[in-house]
Image (cartoon, rainbow, N blue to C red):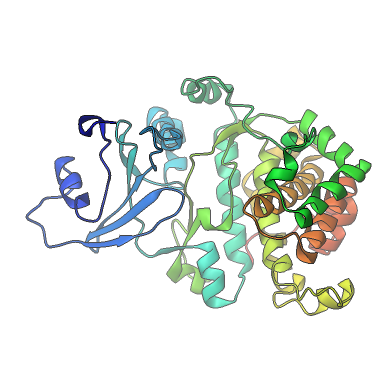
Length: 393
């Protein structure tokens, strides 16, 4: 590639000039603070003043000077809320995007001062306030409720080039038919995951059945890990205080027109991973004893699990009229996501261990016997779960 074809690469040295060229800041302003925050994309936090802060993202270019184009999907969500006045309420729950430059694959958003992501909050405090989980459940439910209209599906689908917007969730379909190349991609220890999955017929059958019953009904985030939710720090530390916008949902680049139970199931799976990842697992330690030695016991997050679901149903009670089996399907999707996360770990060359086996056991119960899983996870049956008060401080 010659120099004239080289893409513009964002850096700490040129980001201020870039923002100035886009008329977002003035070069005569005081020298901004700049902090690099690398994730999948190249991210820069730019603080001009306390009230003027930006997050600038750029997708990484490959050797051909091309990107995945994921940021275009996130920008499409901004176009959605800007294009339909009835979605004004949704604007306050998501990122505030200011600029998208497709040629440079750059996205600029306003940085939310005073917010922190949920993962960081839980790590910092070691506390799991039920009110925080209830606010999260309410926020994602509001997103689903407001977008329950095929008009928005048609609008979002205009971005698609090939794959339909309502078919972006894989649900483990890529491991139904495994070929010899699996031995080149996974070490012998990690093949245990595939052996367990392939030889447990009820597990595979439940996954396939859930995949066939996929119900695309509204906008779903499709990547609701806890780090993709930010909470107002001052309120989270004391949820008894009134707060206008306690949580926001960020990073919408993987969105789909999909099944709302998948989003709620994903959130439940990530809460359960707080517990599963803290298990004191050793090959000579009995599973029952390992569960008792968890540094984050299930009982510690159980109030949040209950409040998450109750907060969702409080904000979107109509979903139970649309889908009476919504809660059962939510737990089945929880099992799917737990399996997906184990597989993702193995794809990153981590060794399949007893913690992963525990996650697979929880996933199997959630998929095959969701009513039993509900009693174990929430401590109450489905019939009582729908009546739990959502806003518990």
